[in-house]
Length: 232
Image 1 (spheres, rainbow, N blue to C red):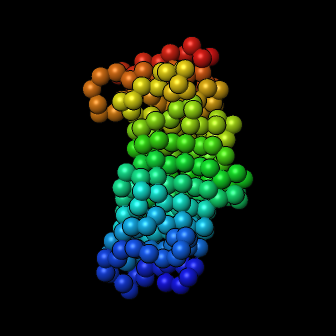
Image 2 (tube, rainbow, N blue to C red):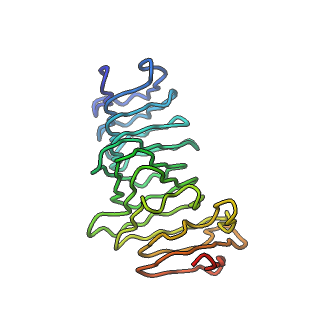
């Protein structure tokens, strides 16, 4: 540990808790190396101005808010979102997200000038939000899936700041209706997708969607979903 960098070494296997760090809880870089086998619990809500990196082992338990300026790279360790939010607020392009098989709860992209490209499958259990930052669903040649089990509302997403790349799939499996146009609680109007799937997941019942979008790939509507194209 230094004033700018936190590293949990492969030679270290003791569970750890971050209860204080600096006056503003800011750190330049946070790393859990492959080979570390303990669990790191963030009790303060770190702001990482550079990147968050995990190797193939170890675990990280997030505070209610984790703020990251650059990339999120999980090589297969266990990231526990604790029902909180991960906020990407950086202002430079060329950043990446490797979810590493662990889901996020709420995720938001807020940094003007920032750009984040997802490079593997990513699951969002809560709210997906894109305001000032740019979100790209995959690089050239990627075939990853972004699964949303919570909300992907028009009011939370600036569709001009999202790119659903060729080869990627947006899979919305939620029991939350997306059909209230007055509240902005529809799918983002005017967005362009590649492959998209709409359904309800494992819950029984019906989920209702309103959308007005362009689909350049395949469109799948599961039996438990009803889609209104009235915004087209």
